Image (tube, rainbow, N blue to C red; front, top):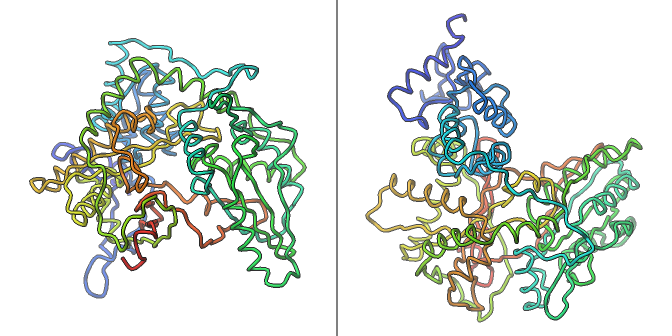
Length: 563
């Protein structure tokens, strides 16, 4: 046993002499023998999970100096790893693209320097990353970045760029349900109704984003805020003893999802509590995308859980006060994305998407309608543990994240099906590069248009390197709102398809809804049979244990399920 202690670090150091960083194993486990199946193959399921000492974390080399120590603290907070060594790699310890963006945000805030995502991927080891940062500090000095400050609520509050685009689309399509974000939760157990209502009222008061409405004067919209004291306005229904209660439940959920919002009058969030039995309820929440996004749903549910737990015990609001609100961010965004910063990012996207194909011509079951239909459906996607493991190994071998590897595969498939070698795929980015906005509810998410060259001359290694470069460069230029990118590229506008791309790919870190918990209650997502397809195809995947799972949402105006 004495010989095993420190063995992981020695093996890692030895292998580092002959292998690139991303191919050096993260952990080393000593076994008397490999577990085998009856067929004599390695029984991977029987392999033990590595214990703490199995990880080659370089703890024998503690961080040295101010920058390494600061970096180690940031890594520990983001990765959930207690001990960080100066020879550790950010990605080996579990880092991925989203965490890398958040790390850059924290480095920017702490040190006042701009570290690009490309440099972070090129130097993922703590010691090397600290060296890059030290050079940047020496070269340009620590610069105090403009803070997001509260603005006077007595003046005119502008919309963010993303909100402005959705407001304009709302005027065109008559406020259809295509930009609604519905959520339905089945609650089983003794629900404390008063605690739930108080929690929702507190969230309503806490987040100005939820209370925003959009009023036009002279054709130009501005933001106004509904009163905090009006409360959330939860609507309640009691279906106990009602004939065909399940049918009525389906109708209420559909009405909640599809009923139009009024931008000018609001509110743009609504909820209902449907009682099915003494200890069974359904809670529906519907928000318009103009005030929310996927990250915001996570914030909403996380804070709802905290508040409900406190109010269940007659406690006070335990959440720390918000220093800024979404309207403050909207004002800051218009100042930040201007001048040379805007011009630099505009030049990048103009060059990157110049002469990109306007349409991905996939074979469809029906002709494309003259105006885009948002009717959709989905098929479940499941990649078994062995295939998922092989994808992870492949990613380690070529220094890509799982997102990058599967994006390359998705682009390859789309190229084969369409016969086109020039493929543009959209992908969402959280666009919360400032730590101040991580706890806000609002419409932050941005979309990147990633262009992949699938010419036959490329081998796998070249393709993965290209996709990695495209993802990293795109995320380094994610500040420019997608609506401005469209205006810069100026693709031919048509009503029958979305501009720049018609296929999406997103990587989700966890099933936020499935992870929701409320004290004393069993909370599960309620399955609904209505969907919206904003694109021809939208592939969303995530890791779940040792598998990769997700859904492929498709336009039912174009495709049959079998296709």
